Length: 297
Image (cartoon, rainbow, N blue to C red; front, side):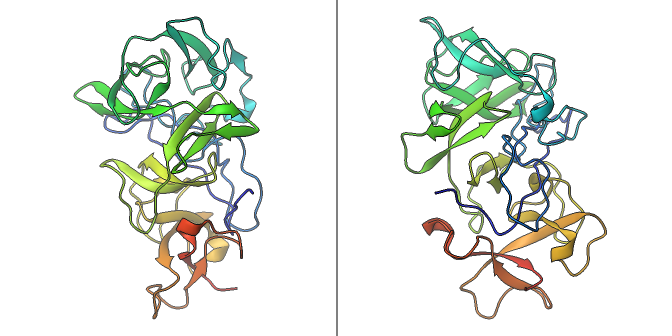
């Protein structure tokens, strides 16, 4: 069953040409605002974008509905696929990866040589969005790559199997993030936004592409109550909520902090209240106590 939050999420963004963050955004939370529940677009909305295009832009900001750096939203990018990332139908010794065919966002797939042996959880080196190559083995792809002394260093995660309409991950503690019209399909661990136990440089954000919370590169460092355009513009532990759900917001959307529904009294400042993040009866077991500090009703 598709689990949907009680609010439609804002897309994620990443700074372009940033030295310490992956700077291309993936398109999956198409910049939706937080009012009525609607299906997300094919993007991830979490700022995962190509960890760089080989020029130091760690590139995760490739284009959630407006990748933030002038990249074209994924839904407007024609698919130019030489292979299927789900089927991994490349010749022996190669694997199917996402790459930026136009130099911006991950918009296509191609076969590249398998040059490494990194397995799930191993550190990896990413060659940039234009190349798409890494040193993970043929079953994994380098993700969440950050610029470390001029190299894009990330972690190997498994490719999803199945297909865009039925993505599959072998580990029940992971979910398939399908981004950019299926060009990207990677199994990533789920996380708890109340605990925020992601690695340095990452935050536990809502991902429209996987319909759960996953560790995503942080972008803006925006605090509670300040205007935002994407979920990972905000500090970890926040959600980019529509202004109508907040007492004050000097923009179309502002950063709202997550809260624990079981805490009494609530940690939310009046007149805000801790409102369930998911629609009634739709919260997965891990997120039954997850709320968001917004106006009640």
